[in-house]
Image 1 (cartoon, one colour):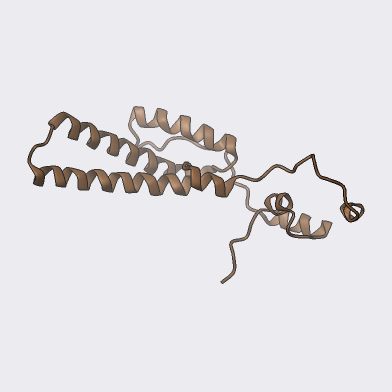
Image 2 (tube, one colour):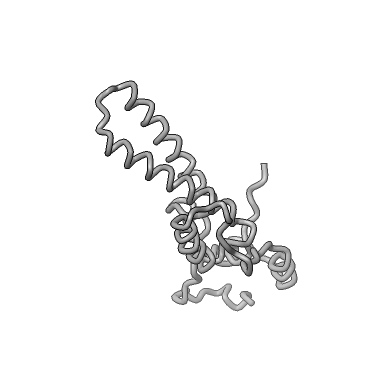
Length: 152
């Protein structure tokens, strides 16, 4: 099974793939870059959810990973996060002593948390998913060696 195709900037930063200039240009031209000129919160979100959407969306746009087509995915994350918070507050407020009732509430809480975590992973909002997205910076402190004259 083949690996996922990586962006050309990542390949160059890793220094593990040697491509000609034309190959680099072709790869860069074929990469999909998300359009982010029409990002707005969907109408089905509540007012507070729309505010949270705008904050997170701006951060994702600044990182260069959110596009117009990701609005619904981010909205689902915001809704799942909001639901998780509401269930958690309800559990705290009720001070549930009945183990069966507490188990039902905890099942709902875990379900909301799972939805929230999966949406966060898809959007690059977790540490692990961001690490997969980060392009390492090329080091300026490269020691010269006898092969440096061949680097374009």
